[in-house]
Image 1 (spheres, rainbow, N blue to C red):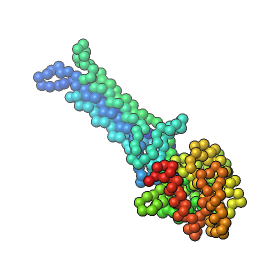
Image 2: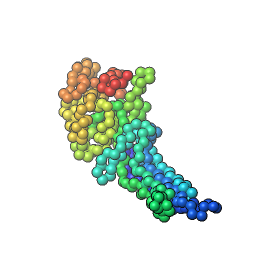
Image 3: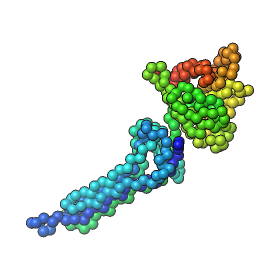
Image 4: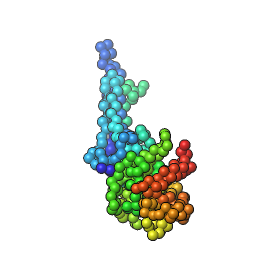
Length: 333
């Protein structure tokens, strides 16, 4: 099950209390202060890991508490620090404050880790407070409390190419054709109910990633259909591949609707490179297909690119075009 949103409570460990203690040695009846410092409380750390692909685990475990630092001891012995807790999440997870929804951290590459809740500092033992005028202090600092907060974990897929289109436009079929991804495919709207990431191998040693995202309907930016459930996943993509059914009566109108939904959700999406392809090219005569390749959609960055996942028509040309566009815009080699 693909889960891309979770709210969890994190509590770092409290610092250990400093100790009040005095030297007690055989021939030193009035030894000086020897209380050790308390140990630091454990931190709550969140780390990105490439083997994870969902936030499902956080549906069942929502509370995380690190261990407290141990109190200081006698003979200047410091308390042991509390053990940190490391929470692993998928690459692409962002961490937000639950009240303001401000983005606190963005775990956008593998093994990146951040401290989301700092452990409390250990209190100082009485040995730290001795002065010429107070050589036997009988007090020590208490440990500081660890940070406690409620945070949002939100997963946004990291992909080079995001597939954009109406339900049943052929996105799932295309990604199953050009990659090893196996999304559910059927001849009805909203077959894809969750994003699917596929790796497309290009020539011998190169590759790029494509995200198959649930189909857009008019009003998606307002939450209609699958709404925000999928739109956030195309924010990170480097370019957008629009899929329009070749049997559509008006390519420009369909494209405008799709583009408007993206703009309404985030104006930055409209700034990405936009490539327009026509799916199901096997339903049109070849002479007509050649004419279509010379046409361009207004406000798009490519001519129309017809292809057929059923017959493989135009598939290699489409992959080549995507690679070249990525190389041009993003420094691929």
